[in-house]
Length: 220
Image (tube, rainbow, N blue to C red; front, top):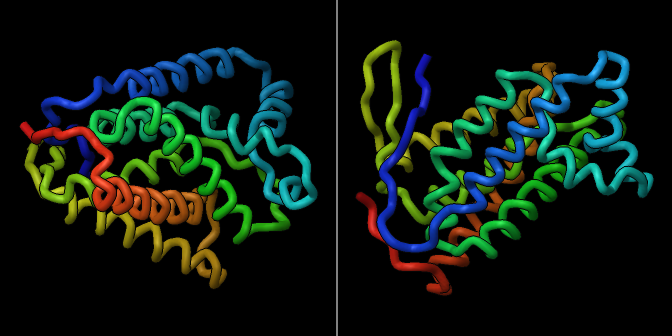
């Protein structure tokens, strides 16, 4: 298994307060959630998750926001927080903390709708930060394509350019999403939330680059 463990950090720009705060908030919420009884936990997922069918009926709209801070298990949480830790700080340093908060949350909302559009009749709650984090990764691809991502294969570390890692990651999500639509695969992964978030992130990354409304930073 190949696992990303870091990237080239930036010098200058804004300190990534919210990138780290979001990680801490997600971990705190999960620890509280983890203390709930099984029956209460199921109701909790429906209360704070995003249920596609309900959204199209005009109900449970708050779940589009709260679902971004709910995870179903340690693996789900740690995987998402690892990607947040690697990619989010560079984006916040570049576009600023206030813009980052809006960018991140809107990315999560659009990711929920991308999933709901593909599964409009689903009554299974969608939870997790991966849609918003996918938006961060999409912006990272545009803003930092030459950054080097640190990967670990077994016990052997190596680096590849972000453009290679992120294009391959998105290709995997897109292929899985297409297979899901065609009924070739079933699973609990919200592929289309990843796809929707990533595309939004790329568009916004392009906007920040073209507009020039971003801090001057340098890769270390």
